[in-house]
Length: 176
Image (cartoon, rainbow, N blue to C red; front, side):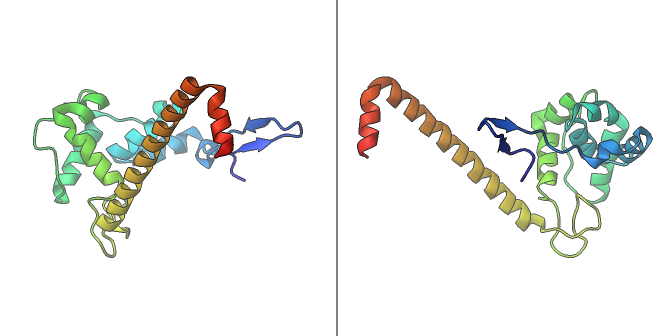
């Protein structure tokens, strides 16, 4: 059973167990820092926001941002066409109409990868599904968003139904 699922104890009370700790946290701090130092800017930023301990571990400085932009340019990938504000991560990602944020989202979905062997732009030299996989992931995310919106809408309808009908609503539901 997944550790994030609710498990029942003997009294029938449901307890939410915490997820298993990552083996990464068992590594010495020096190794964690060494691994984090090899990450390109988008991966370091994601690592930084994954856990409070990692926020202090991962660094996202101007040098990493510039290095990432240069490597994109050298590989012929799209780069922001306007000036980037390198001062903070927030300004860098959201500045100039959010171009950097959109580039990182596309990268995360493997939207820039080429089909075929060694075409992955996220893990250089690896093979991934490329744009086809990116399209499938985008469709899946859209479907999940639509399902979430539909569920929220049904909950709103149900709440208003209960408020308006009171106990009569329960009787009607029992008949259905």
